Structure formats: C-alpha cells, structure tokens
Image 1 (cartoon, helix red, strand yellow):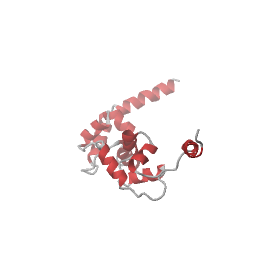
Image 2 (tube, one colour; image 1 turned 45 degrees about the vertical axis):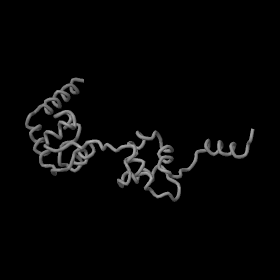
Image 3 (tube, helix red, strand yellow; image 1 turned 135 degrees about the vertical axis):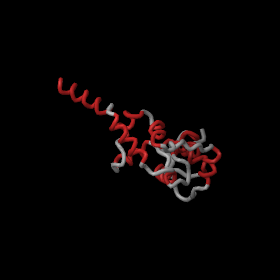
Image 4 (spheres, one colour; image 1 turned 30 degrees about the horizontal axis):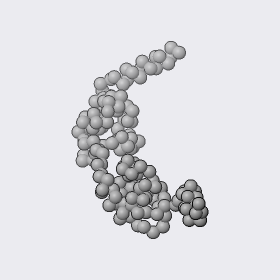
Length: 155
C-alpha cells in the first residue's frame, strides 16, 4: 500500500516537472502547420511517437483548445451543414439498390454527404434519412406486416 502511494507521488512529480512540459511544447510546435487539430489527429501523432500521448498532454495543458493554442495550430472546428444542404447532398446519391447503414457511413467518409451524426441530428434516424433523400431501404418486419394488413385486410 505504501509502495502504491510512493508511485503515485513520483508520477505526480514527473507530471509537474517543467522540463517535460517544455519538451512536449517543443514537439507540438514541430507538427505540420496548417492542419487543424482534433483529438483523433493528436492520438495519431502520439502513436507515431511525434508527441506525448493525449492524456499526458491534457494533464499538462488541459483542453484540446489549449493544446492547439500552445502548439500555434488551429483547432478543427465543427462543420456547420444546414439541413437544406444535407437534403441536396442526399438526393444526389445513387438510387439503385437498397441503402444500408454501412453504405451511408462510407458515403460520409468519402465526403459525398455529411457524416452520419450530422444527418442523424437533422433527421432523427436512418429511415428518416433515407426517406428525405429518396433512397430505398430494406423495410423492417413491422413495416412489412403493416403493408400486408393494409393491402389484404379490409376491416
């Protein structure tokens, strides 16, 4: 138990050593200029060994915004896509075949449409996204039952 407390104190001392912070700042300032930073990009640089890992940077400097200021780099801002623009981009997608979740995600990664979280914020769920974009999707069992009742049962 005492050993754990000693290790904890040593770790705290290492975090508070100014030369480690200076070294981290020096490494941050060596990053390529003009590329906006976000958490994922910082983690990628840490995996490549270019900078300390993200949790260490947060312990030293706080928020990602503060890390970006120290590095002298812009922070990646959120993309503000309007609902109308999202609808236009969805309607440009190919209409043949069924749209499934993975296709929608891949179109988002290829930047043909806004990413899924943005679309979900605008339209609610996958089915609504498809309906707004005029895309076919595989109906659920409940939807097939309702259609069957509507078509063949008249009471």
